[in-house]
Length: 357
Picture 1 (tube, rainbow, N blue to C red):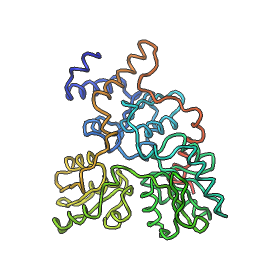
Picture 2: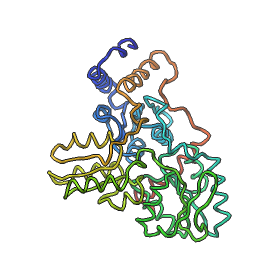
Picture 3: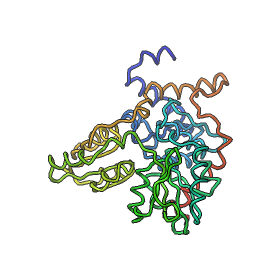
Picture 4: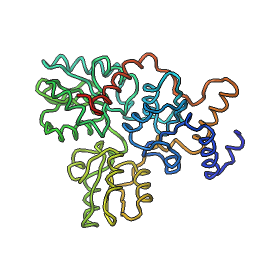
């Protein structure tokens, strides 16, 4: 099989994966993030943003969950999985630079510094684009995970309790969330050197200075250039974009929200989109009755690491394990040290969003 894989075409990989999916039946599920290549998306049983995939993965009863995305996503699925479920990722090196911008030790130091400067309880809220240690840290302090689709609701939950929020790692998502809550003049920030800007004691949100390399590239000029070319264009951007870019857009939303907005737009609509380029390209192909344009073509190299060949290998590794009794080559490792706190904070997000108040 290894030699066969090395000589297979994309069409043959697709045929192989579909055949194995049929053989496994309900015992195998493929989760695919919107930023994945079109072929992986077509093979996905569930396609969506980070929040949707976290929830749907949690609800799945499949024995094997193959996650086409980056590592923090598969790690989240592992945290929420039942003990008998195996979570695999076709390339464990598919990371996230933003998630690497803070770790548990740095988060604890920042939290201690901020707590010393505030009379109010500070509750940590961590973006889902983070690893298990950071999610665990939030869980130990009764904080929550958030996603780009629900950050406003999560932050508002704690503000309504009279608490401040330490929001990390994405600064832009924090700023845009503060703007939606009309508290953008009541924020402070802290960086990796523990340098603080603003008055923590009078701030409702304190923001870490992390960022997404993909969304940081979009500028006001990108929007202005498209608006000069197209009179009736609508601009859609992800909230990881800068505040200045978001303020010029018509819709700010997660990948799932952007997808739904494009899907439901009238035929003939012209839309300029500021998010990962593979996703924008797929939207253009999926909805040919609309003109879908890049603000600029900015791609995530880690998402591109998941290929059809690697997906096929990860599924084949399940068969090899069943035959040989060896460890699953592509399985997300156990994270026992951080699992309890991380699971608590992921479930807190789901509780708040799905109806818990």
